[in-house]
Length: 432
Image (tube, rainbow, N blue to C red; front, side):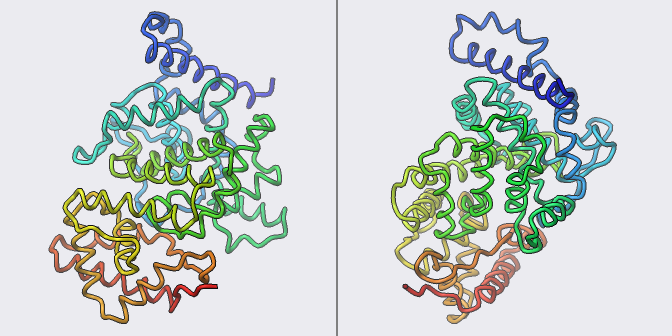
C-alpha cells in the first residue's frame, strides 16, 4: 500500500475506533465498559501532538500549498509558540504559517468533538461568550449523525484540508496553466473547485466516486455561495441560487455544512491555536440559524427572498430578546439596518446594536437612502446585487481600532456606512 494510503487508513481506523467507543458509551451504557478496547489505538487516546503528526503525514502535499496562502484581512497576527504550547504549524514545519495553523486547528476541533472533549474545544474562549455545553452536544450529535462508518470520516477530513487551498498563489497559477482561465478575479473557492475538477488535488484520489461527488458538490456550492457570508447577511438572496446544486442531496449538504462549522472553529488558529476560539456561543447560534434556512433551500421550500429573510427575522427576534426594538424585514430601511447589525455581529449585544442604530440615523438622507437601496437588491430579477466582501471584518477592525467612547464608535460606524453606500454606487432594486 502506498505511504499516503497507509497514513489515511491509520487515520480512518483510529477515528472510527473512537466513533464506536463514543457511540456506545454515549448512547448505550451497557457497552461503555468496552471503551477500554479502543484507548490504545483509538483517536481519543492520541495526544494532540500525535494527532498533528498523523495529519501532517496524511496531508503533507496539501498542507504545503498553504505555506504561502493569503489570510483574510481580519486577525493578521500570526500565532506564536511558547514554552507551554507549540502551534501545529511549528510542530510540523518549525515555522508558523497562518493557514496551516487554521486548517490543522479545524481538524483538531473535529477530533475534540468526536472525543466529547468539551474542555479542549473551549478552554481559551472568553468566558462571557463561551460555547455552551448543550451547543457542543448538539454539534457532536450533528457529527455523529453524518459519520455512521469509517467511510464517512475521510470525506470531511479531506474537505477540511482542501477548504483553503484556493488561497495559494502557487495553486492558482497551476490552475490557470491547466485550464487557460485567468484566476486573478476568481475567489479561492472557484480556484479549488477547478483544481479538484482537473485532478490536481491528490487526497481526493483516496475517496470513492460517491464521496468525490459529494465533496465536489460542496466545492461547487462554495464557488457560488459562501455560507459564512450568508450566516452574517453579507451576501444576497440571489446567492442562494447556488444551493440548487445540492437540491435533494442532504448528505452532501451536511458534509459541506460541517466543513464550514469546523473551518470557523479553526478560524482563529492563526492568532491562538490552543482551542476552537472562534466558535463561541453567538457564532454557533448564528450558523445554526443559517443551517435551518439552508435546509429549506436544499428541500426547495420558499423563494430565495423568503428564505433569506427567514435568517434576518431570526436575528431580529434575537435582537428583540436583548431589548432592541422590533425591526421589520418588510420595511426597506429597517431591513437594511438589520443587515448591518448582523454583518456587525451585534445581534447578541444590544449596546452595540444601539451604536449601529445611532450611526445609521447620523447619515444624511441621501447617504442613508443609498445604503438602503444597495442593501435591498436581491440579485434575482431586480438588478445586479453587490456583495460587500469582508465587510464584517472591516466593521470589526474599525471598532477594534476606535476608543471605547460611544461618540467615537458611532462616528466610526457612520464612516463605514458612508463607505459602503459609495461602494453600492447607486445600486437599487429594479424589477425585471
